[in-house]
Length: 324
Image (tube, rainbow, N blue to C red; front, top):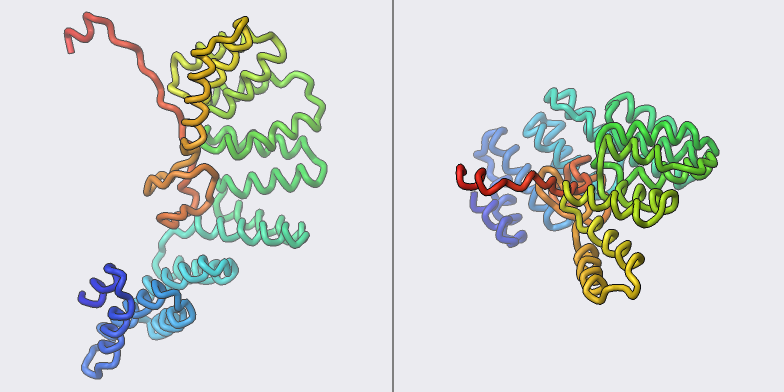
């Protein structure tokens, strides 16, 4: 307990000394020594001494002491060092030892290996890892996105578009990640008018990036007034700053001369949007402007998703408020 207290306070050197003295005691039972070795390994990890921590955790696994926690510690080390192959092997041991579901982690490790293969130009190797990821976790969004990107790079925009649409059907929270790729597919396929396709997606999963793309398409096809009408309807149901900024920009186009008040409001909203989080972790609440497949805060995989705008309910009438 004292060693753990020192570690929480950041006094790692003192924590290491306490746990080293415990390990050196000959009177400890095997289970007590295993616990002390694990705590010493945590000290080494916090101090950045990954090689020493790895050695202790490996010893614990071999001696069948604190196996579950030691394997978890090894996975943390290998993730920090980006040794994804060793992450895979250790996760498989942990799954067999504890019957713990490691589906999401194993799929993500395969995706990491696939991205490494793509950077090295090994397309067949990358495709093999993606197939393994989807075999382990059929709902792995990242594997589907990587697969679509590979098909697009290989010159098959039709297959890529199909894969992107499958991602879109699973929910609006990954639309920011897949929408640019889907738009590129439609461009390569020579789609002249994409308004109807965007509208179909929007009705299924309304989201800020899709709203902006659809607004641009409506403006190009039917004019500024139609785009403004679409935004007014959207904002009456969702509190979305990006939609408000786009509406103000359209109003300025219609006003001659442009309104000074609208220009000031647009500047304020634009500054707010520059600091507004785009993604958030479902588990710990970590906020980010870019998509992370592993949360930098709680280290969970696949927990960060796009932030959705608040849905505006109906405004209660005076009679309803009096009843309440």
